Length: 150
Image (cartoon, rainbow, N blue to C red; front, side):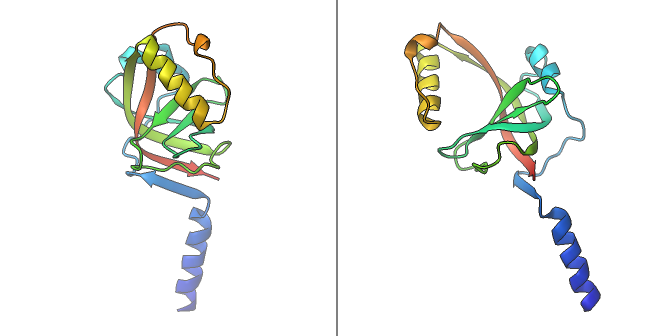
């Protein structure tokens, strides 16, 4: 009985620094974020997995994170349907692996302004509609699962 307790305690220590969110990760290979963003149309509609450091987290609902590659400073947003996954608001600076379908969003200028205003409000940052110059194409991952490590 004592050895079972020690085994369980050891396992808890090994996994204590890892938070699994959403569905389990299924891919074994990751796409480098800079490679993904260099040829985004090559990946649109495909399930991809990326790895990096969490740069930002939605502070209102935890519905997205931005993961950056430390070597290139390139970043991609992982967006989930509200409530499917709630990313920890204190995840910034932690290592993460995320998986989901890579999508392309074509936003009109009006949609881009609304999106930028929404994000500024979420993050309590100032916003000027003049900062949005026109229609925008946005690439992001529709997240299905992630692992965040301490």
